[in-house]
Amino acid sequence: MKKDLEEGKPTCIKCKKAMEPVQIKLGTINARAWKCSKCGEEILHPLDAEKALLMAKLKKGIKLKVGILNKAPYVRFPKEFHKLLHKGETVSLSAKAPGNFFMRIEKGP
Image (cartoon, rainbow, N blue to C red; front, side):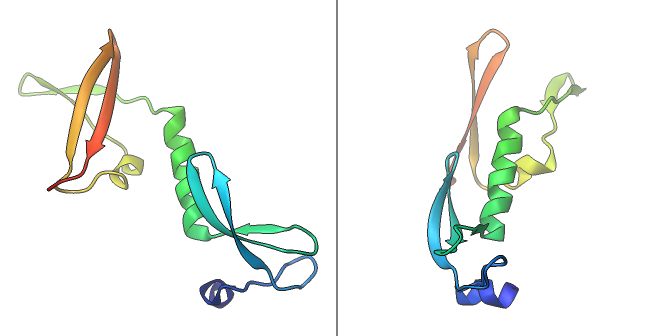
């Protein structure tokens, strides 16, 4: 099936007809997919499906413990956030309300 995805014409599993490429909205993500014109079966592109699952997991929120290193508090982010952060980017952290922080990732120079 990998070869079919690279060529852009996978075959429907149910009715064995060629599928057409479409765009599907998954929350805030526009995912690449293929749809069968006969039975309506849809297949998501694996990379877009992975991205959608990651965003859904991060939207739920993750509880982190605060540590202290040389009298300074720190928080370690799990590997899911590692995919969103890149070297050279700046992170802006602001307090929206007592006990409520907002973090924005800004692109580096």
